[in-house]
Length: 360
Ligand SMILES: N[C@@H](CCC(=O)N[C@@H](CS)C(=O)NCC(=O)O)C(=O)O
Figure 1 (cartoon, rainbow, N blue to C red):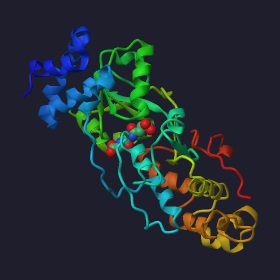
Figure 2 (figure 1 turned 90 degrees about the vertical axis):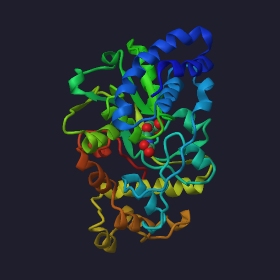
Figure 3 (figure 1 turned 60 degrees about the vertical axis):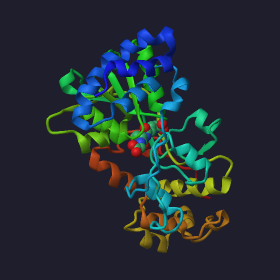
Figure 4 (figure 1 turned 180 degrees about the vertical axis):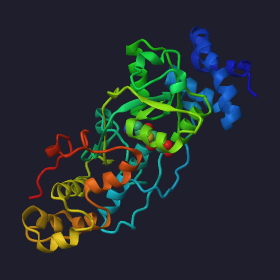
């Protein structure tokens, strides 16, 4: 097992002499707990943890060379927005899904390895401009929250100020790592931030006691809690009002207008059909007798899909093979306890923010 002494050269190389005492103390006090628990329980590599801690705490640009890129993986997860991506091709089975970590995703679009990011990329000014992305309609209005153990004294009414002295774990290459550092500073909470490449590592370390807190998009915390909370632990999510806005939606390379239109109108068609109560179960019958806006989206009179380079029945197929916005939401998110009613993800007629321009 590595000792504190083993980390000294690394600390000195990264931080230099003047910062070293302060930083070493902060990392090493915490690192002992990480090493004791996470390593023995979860088999986490101590060097990797220290490198991540170093990268997160101070002077990240000087520690960049310590992080190796993770390999791309293909996986078969069914997810609400993945399904929407499938639908744009007219054949929901014809999509090649590539799983990317948060820090890999924008490069994968820029190199053409993937055409669109789905699921949990937050729309931000820098990503929309200097990073070279364009963003489609927000499909899920999320916000960052924190998750901790009740046995550590946390509750639903805990606040960021209450995490003073905690080890906080999140994913690298995310809005969430920046938000929590900023929020902790503003709240006067001193934290040790550990950044991980994958979410699995975050939760494995959290379960093993290597982090006091995990933080990311609230929906992801709800999902992980539902799936991973061990029988002998009780996790709680707070604060009730998220610490950030995380508008999630499709993201693609900038200045590709035809592709952007196809992605965006796939989402809009799912939203509009939801407003009319059209579902995968009734879309064939509805389209057979539809009028006006529904008829256009079905591929009937006045249809606009062919002018976009899609087949006339492209959105009929979207609804048939995948479902309307509400159907997809309910199927994927109701099982973990997330409902549209009363949330920002309700339709605009129900007081929410889900809204589409007209199909005409
Ligand atoms: N919405 C935030 C956070 C995104 C994020 O943290 N994603 C993580 C965890 S939900 C992820 O997808 N990790 C992939 C993995 O764990 O394999 C952002 O756009 O930066």
